[in-house]
Length: 183
Image 1 (tube, rainbow, N blue to C red):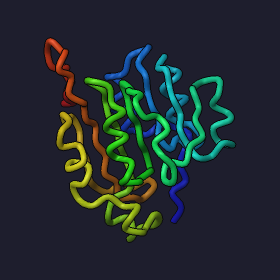
Image 2 (image 1 turned 90 degrees about the horizontal axis):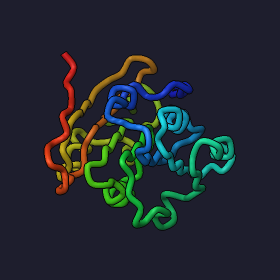
Image 3 (image 1 turned 90 degrees about the vertical axis):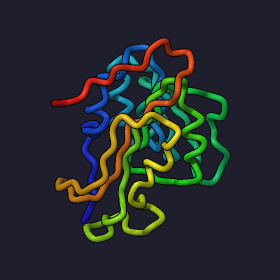
């Protein structure tokens, strides 16, 4: 079964979009054709788009800072830079996690969503190195404030996913961010 991705933004990103404000900086890691870059830029965020596919990035140059980079075989290209939002969808390269976490500005939001164990029963990816283990994102984000987490099955298209919304500590904040809950 193919996991054809639509041009619509991830519902996980849409769910947390109320935390985003014009002028914030955003990093879209392994952004592909840029469905999230467009979504974030339309809301006034300054977006940095990173992917290894120069052709896919070419169409994003008017909406984002684009960076062609090999995220798996070269050093992290954004060392020392911090972002208010770090977004990763449908991509997993575990050695990159320390760099992603270090890229969060104080109080920055990490939105991460990718395939989880169980996906091998419904399609691709099916290799263990590309599937999150149960609770893996919770462990990776143990030093962040977890404000949302899901681990389960989505019917359309069929896939097993794990996703997290987590905030980096902000020692300078006068009060904790009030996150409205649904329901």
